Length: 216
Image (cartoon, rainbow, N blue to C red; front, side, top):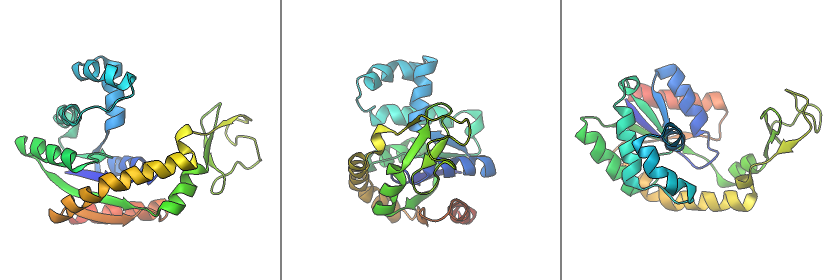
């Protein structure tokens, strides 16, 4: 079974993908993580993409699909995998379909993790982490028990991601909506699209995803 999780930054794709991996034995495949592994491992693909990534440019769809093709051919992916955040455009979706068909495989489901922009912006812009141990916090939803002191290590220095600034998050969401609207239509027409409420509690989102996977 090969499934796709779609959703904007902060929707919880990675967290839910890891849960599916644990419960269903479907390997989580994040193209960002895969690219970094290819570069670190000095593979043929890694050598191709390293200068592109170092220049801050986007890796081509052809390279991404080739990388996924190699990965899903590995023994641990024979039962299936979860594509986390790929495809992002209809061109990538078509290329993925063509590659899978050539391998005699197909997508079982595409799960859209639906969120509302305003609460998602609040969720992302409030995030911060301990600079010492990396423990994660949130201004509203998970502040440290003692203000200014890490619950885990007692550290007093904290950091925030540069891309969690309100204006950056808003721009990322706008880009996601532009790219994904036609992608949703593409999968809806193929009767592969399912939607879950990603603003619900973690376990409820997991339950909704499990219900979709039980049906396909």
